[in-house]
Image (cartoon, rainbow, N blue to C red):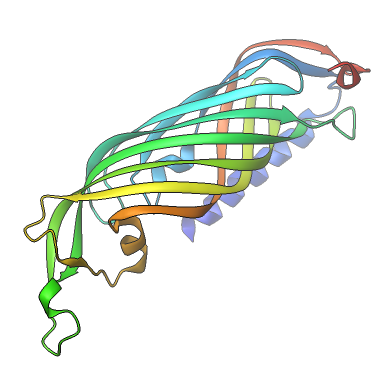
Length: 238
């Protein structure tokens, strides 16, 4: 809850900055390179935290590609440690603005992603031969997990120009997620994974799965290089 309040205050401050900066803007950015970081990746409550950064290359005012890469760092929400990476690639199409002096630009995009994770975990298991009996036996064990996750998302988002070279990118989308999870270093591999913590159970259960996927996030960017063109008739030509 505290984190949500801080995030809300941060976005309000940014919107105030945008409103103060919007007057007098009459150009579009193109042929630009924007360096971005994903601050929410550091506080991932479902997966392991990641130091994630990337670039957006905008070839025209309406067309861009965006890619990012991150390494797993620190400990997860259950104290687990591990290593791995997360990667994303996105093709983006900016929409025509309704107003000429608009610093908030919306877009649609197709995103592909691929992650690999190797981490320790602690879960509950039930002995296979005791399932369904009155003497069903449960135990807790520490083990390792190797996971591969890939998928596609259809996204809608917007970018907000802040001050002179900073941008805020907020987005959401839906898609499909394919996951392969393998357990290692278990004393009894045939026993059944049974964890009363539903969030950890869905994250760590072994097997191959296909899920619907919901993505929400934000990135903060800094424009390293840019060219501009006048707004008049620019969108019609691209």
